[in-house]
Length: 112
Image: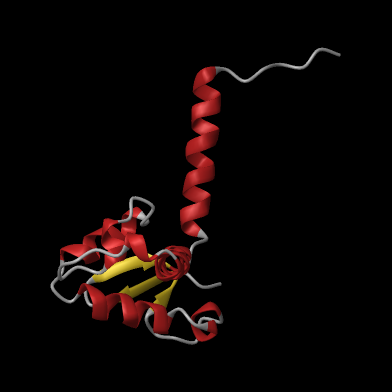
């Protein structure tokens, strides 16, 4: 039997469907007018740990150093425009503890 290859439009449709399914299954944290994925907050913590181990990445200024990191997830980038970016990042990391993963925190949505 000969199998059929997917056409370009079928492949694009499948990719869009996969992206939609991924976003539907994500847990979101809502805080101070921002909505970010739990996975993004975990990535934020990883980036901050990297920056503390690599002091040359520290920057001067009012923004947290992580705001200058090109690896900062897209949904966290608007937080950097806030004058309260450092405190918002701190709060998001606090909310993202195990309680959020268990969907016990009222700031978390998308839990199943």
